[in-house]
Amino acid sequence: MVRTRLNSVSVSGDEQSYERVKPVLEAIARPYIYTGAFGTGASLKYIANMFVASHMVAAAEAFALAKRSGLDLDLTFETISNSIAGSAILCQRGPMILKGQYSPAPDRSTCSGTSSPRSRITP
Image 1 (cartoon, rainbow, N blue to C red):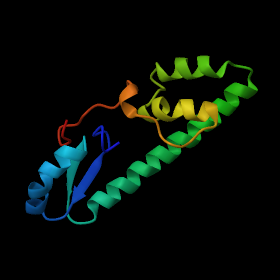
Image 2 (cartoon, one colour; image 1 turned 180 degrees about the vertical axis):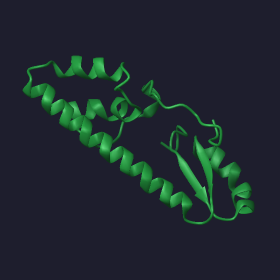
Image 3 (cartoon, rainbow, N blue to C red; image 1 turned 90 degrees about the horizontal axis):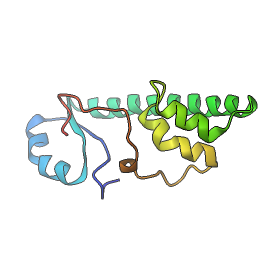
């Protein structure tokens, strides 16, 4: 993900230090965001991981229900991922769930995704 600059980085601590490392961040990450005082970057990362985990559990449960209901799982994935119920994590990890294959994570650049840049996050 570093090679394709698709990893997200939360930076916290002294703002002057953040300004000095911006060229490195530009080279390895997109988006990156300065979150403020030391430790807030780690807190934001923990929160993001909670979102990913909850989305993964919900997706796995939904696919299990679709399977038990006799639905075609590829059709289910295609329908949901192109609806308001879709998400970037579903787009990236849904195919892995369907195959029972969880590593390595696919390249996010192939996913249309639903996330959009925010004003404080670099494009």
